[in-house]
Amino acid sequence: MGEELKLFGSWGSPFSRRIEIALKIKGVEYEYLEEDIIHNKSALLLKYNPVHKKVPVLVHNSKPIAESQVILEYIDETWNDNPILPRDPYKRAMARFWAKFIDEKCVPTIWKSFMSGGPEREKAHEEACELLSTLEGELKGKKFFGGETVGFVDIVASFISHWVGPVQEAAGVDVLTEDKFPMLYKWAEEFKNCPVIKENLPPRDKILAFFKARLEMLTSSYKNRV
Image 1 (spheres, one colour):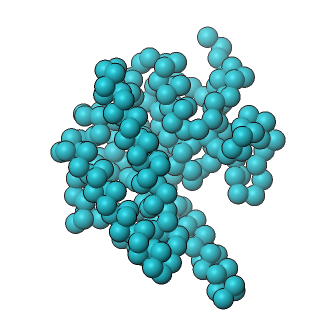
Image 2 (image 1 turned 90 degrees about the vertical axis):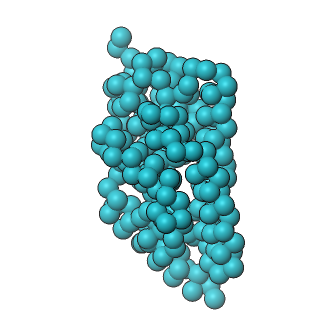
């Protein structure tokens, strides 16, 4: 078809990795452009995403699409093979609901439990555990959130499966453990070990090193202000 398909992403971003996973599941070829989102965002990224100025951005035949969940839905509607969203309207709505729950509730609270300190961290940790308990209840013994195959909610939850482990190790905080959340922990292992997923996740040790350095920098900055 001679389609142009470019993905602007960052190696450590769970949001741009979502798009890579979806495109690989679909078997769609694309060009990947790595962005330095901390120090030097490219002119093209700012051109294609002038509102949020962040990754991921998918450019399909010169038309840019931003925001990871929006991009995932676009991919599913554009390439019909290997659907990631259910075709049943109710199940589709529920998948959107849980994906929204993950991005709007779970992700920011988990980040806060890692990056804050003192009483604020304790409160965020309690809230994060409550949210993960709710998410574990949604699994209800299923292999994946959508059933027997990886789907939309699993892809959105990839942050929980792959990033939470090394980041909580760097922060010295236990949020997701096998003892606390056995079903969610098992799901995370199953998800990470699917070949198409495993091939498209950043190395754990690289994430760990990055966030150790980031946390040390934040700690040093805090001490200098006190």
